[in-house]
Image 1 (cartoon, rainbow, N blue to C red):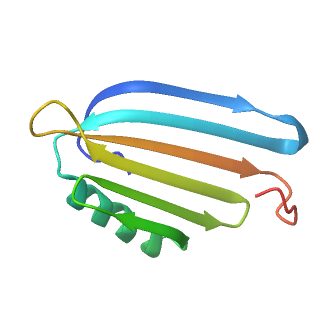
Image 2: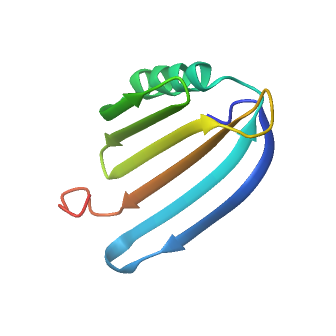
Image 3: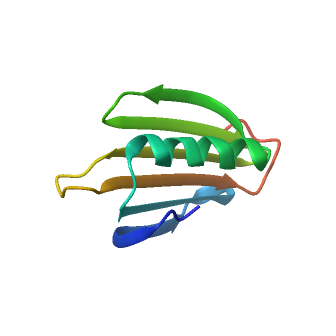
Length: 102
């Protein structure tokens, strides 16, 4: 989910060999790290993702989740700008759902 997007800092995608594709997006939002982390946990659970990594501190949240043929990681940290946080989401998909590359 794009939570209260304030400024997109970078956004790119790439197609790799073997049917792999990757994408990364980083943006600034006007929400706390804990609120964003909770929103992504809720999103993952509600949409059939299996959370494989969940690390949380007051200043940073790191979540990774998998779903058939997809891996998504989300990193949230406090921003130097008061009242904002930075989100970086990275997704990797593969056409062959039986592949072991993920």
